[in-house]
Length: 168
Image (tube, rainbow, N blue to C red):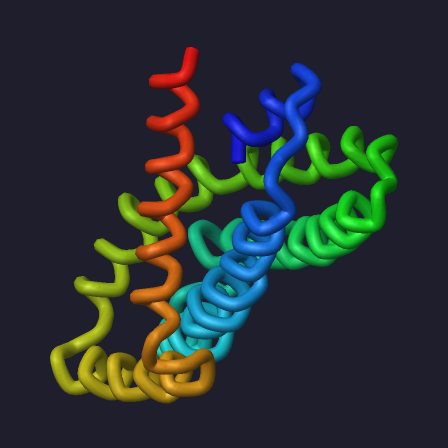
């Protein structure tokens, strides 16, 4: 997203397909899969085990999920406007992409170094298996091929960037 936003600022016209793919990834994988697993399954289970829902790490992560949801709605609107030829909406698109770039490194850090280690300490094996089962339900709702599709998307985007670099 950072590379894409920088390119737009430098006058590059991104492929519409790339913009649509990124918006799909944020809407489907991040919102409907990742955030849903945490918001609807993990966080309530941790709260049931006594973890304060408004405190760190759950409170800040929940707040960031809401911010990401707003950014996802904005991204869909920016991509749609951009598709319709509204190039002045490029600024809105850049701002939205940068919003994700600013949000997610810290968010992922909180998950990896606070939430997940805490979860491993608090939830016993039985509760973790129950959580995995519930996560499977979420995965089936987005489609069993979603992870594969988005891994292929990441590979395509990476290949496009490598090809751009070779052309320079």
